[in-house]
Length: 341
Ligand SMILES: [Zn+2]
Ligand SMILES: [Zn+2]
Image (cartoon, rainbow, N blue to C red):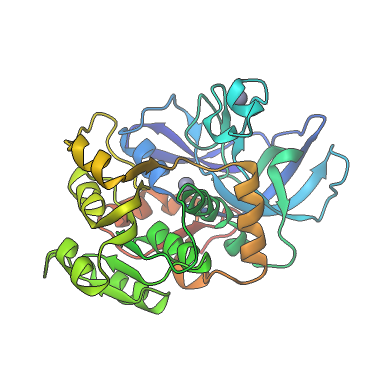
């Protein structure tokens, strides 16, 4: 079968590999669509170090072509949850499978990384596939990033009618925006540099948008809606995390959703946290529950996913896709492993 393998930092090649064989309790999925994510980008560029050669790709959907798992048969259309928890550590026992100490991830970041879905076929435990009915595969491939958004929203104390101020409206920011709206956030303000992305944020549910190169987004939020019950950062940079924090109302939550550099530090005034009771929260990956909820939202058409998919590419196009991501060109890129687009 054809795969796109990372062979070194900045080097990816289409390689022929042996088709995997499922073991007991597993299924073999023919991959129809696999999203390209910033995690792949970081692994490609070496800012997230991994052992090579490795097949990346952790946002996928396809058709079961071989099943050694009860309840699943050839022809079933599924989305793949890439995170395989150990189910033995204390985090797993508490249901916090995303914090598992010994997790294994199919094509994504984890303690142990298995070959992923930038390939024609991938082997998956039955616990990690979710039926997607008849939705298009490229929509099913958004189940994983949407599950991260579902998880992020659940990390906040949001109630219907709570105001949300978000910084960053890239592909994942635009998914997160819709997830917050879906959960009853009102009003929502989005700060985003790029004109097209800002416009799309308005179309997808932001009540107000601001260009941070034009005016101070913190002032804009305070003047337009007042301090936000929830301030969310979807960029991964210290200055924008500080902005999200400065936008947050007393008693509110600041959510760090963007992935900051591992060695980044920031200054905080502990008196403000004490006096204003601001809750600074992180959100990492997804649980099995989040994944199921995300698939349900996609099945019922509660999320506009198709607008976010701007490119469908083949395995050999990945290096070009990474270049486009570096320049914030387009939105979600979907690899179609079986098909030359
Ligand atoms: Zn991802
Ligand atoms: Zn565990």
